[in-house]
Length: 473
Ligand code: UDP
Image 1: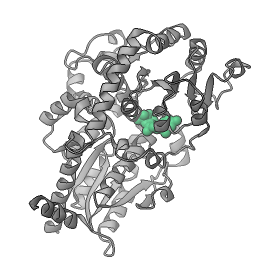
Image 2 (image 1 turned 180 degrees about the vertical axis):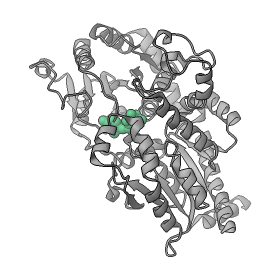
Image 3 (image 1 turned 90 degrees about the horizontal axis):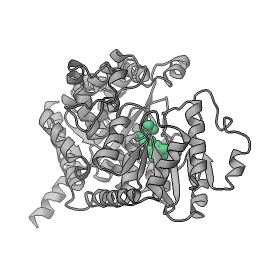
Image 4 (image 1 turned 30 degrees about the vertical axis):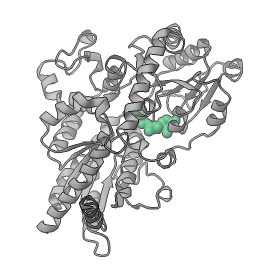
């Protein structure tokens, strides 16, 4: 009885509180931020999203949220050139958005007809928002859309620089990072050919901004990253909330609605015609690019494997090519329907399909988590930053996938790896292990589970910040 009264009191208290969310405008960051928005909305908060005009999701897909768009202050040329240079884009967003973001947030906080703003929740990669929130005396909570294990590595950058691991030297790629087992130097989360100073600036900004925030939300769960979360708990004195996997708290349709590209539904009817667990689903996410030679080795590796495959070739995936024109003529016809190539798919639906037996992925954190949640073993081909750490955890810590090690992107090697995963005993063991993780992912969201409890703690935490704001005004 007492419990019921206190729950009711909390519900009442919650009503009429608004949260302002600000995602990094990239697909892998927008998806989890909007999923988080749905979670918090279901707990009684009103939601306002501030978004850049650049890469904006369609507000009509989210009628229960209020959207405010700000200019990112980047010229067409700057946007075009920086889309090939992720770090440059992030660095520019952190300097050019300051004023527009400040003005928008200030207006929202002083809007008399709107519900009072309890706090700002912004992406960890937008640390400039901390200074703006401080100036406006609004608490900021951080959403880190990547995993906790890669964050441990980002937080160790000063040590890695001091001990000479960073910047990476090509001669040391295969050496272990003894301070961060089981990582090797080649797994460190950098971007090849990028200016090390810009990388340090972005990484240090993210870590230091998170440390001084009012809390850190993770799209992960304890059963997956317990030891990394413990390490962070010791290093960071703010409260942390591992409340993932977000997309499993809401149905697939809610996350599809934040897709920036049109999802090709033809793949689902194609999957319906394939044998159970026979298909290799191949996608390298929304940003990664590969060269012409790698594109062809992947195509022939898949064709020669004799397994059915569904391949997402995003326009822009291959540098200097529009879409499939690099494939030799007759390539698709020779497959006689065994391969299906599209530009973009409803990925969560694909991974949940009973015909999918493996996911060849770049190991972006969302893709990694989505694969784990459906119990789909992975072929790991990380390209840059945290993808490298995620891939090493998939292959060596959770042991739920096999890694195409650097330099092995050759059709014969690809064919062998696909066999190991799809046909041999090793693959069966991997499948059993990932099914255990899938079970853990599902349990943590049930009443009493770690993420379920963590969401309740987050809600209470936001309400405690809220009262602080109201008293201090
Ligand atoms: N995704 C999708 N359709 C596709 C490929 C990817 O909807 O054809 C989604 C996927 O479900 C995930 C996101 O795009 O939520 C990609 O995020 P991730 O962190 O895996 O990689 P990134 O794109 O940030 O490199």
